[in-house]
Amino acid sequence: MGKTIVKGSGTEGLPLSEVVVAGGFVFLSGLVAFDSEGKIVSGGIGTETRTIFLEIRRLLALAGAGLDDVVKVNVYLADPADFDAFNAEYRRHFGNAPPARISLSVKLTIDARVELDLIAYVGDRR
Image 1 (cartoon, one colour):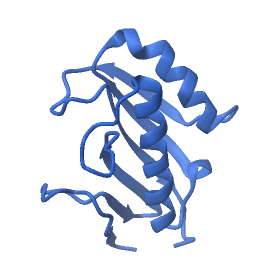
Image 2 (tube, one colour; image 1 turned 135 degrees about the vertical axis):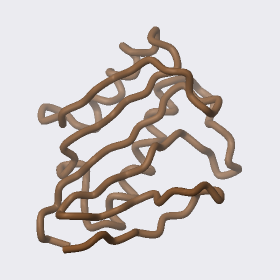
Image 3 (cartoon, one colour; image 1 turned 90 degrees about the horizontal axis):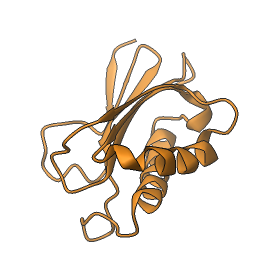
Image 4 (cartoon, one colour; image 1 turned 180 degrees about the horizontal axis):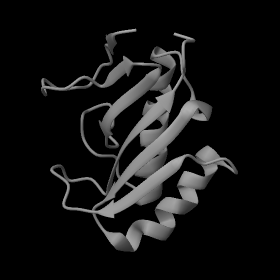
């Protein structure tokens, strides 16, 4: 089983692939909450997180996966004060069976409050 690049829209000419499938795993590049005009959505950390999860679901579906297949999430928060509000929204998407996760407070390269990347496992379903 080799590496497959899944074409997703929105990379804005950056040297990356939004979704890569390899060895039964689906890797999603870092995602921030862009609106339809390419700007970060307004409304704070909850709105940004919900917007990112809409895109995560769309990209995972392109690779034949869903949120139940996610095994690892990396969370990058621009402001550690957003941690509790982020977690409140995050819980709505993973419920009682969340994946492994790390959360970091970092200076993002874009004016967003949060960025997520993740790994899902689909085995040989794809």
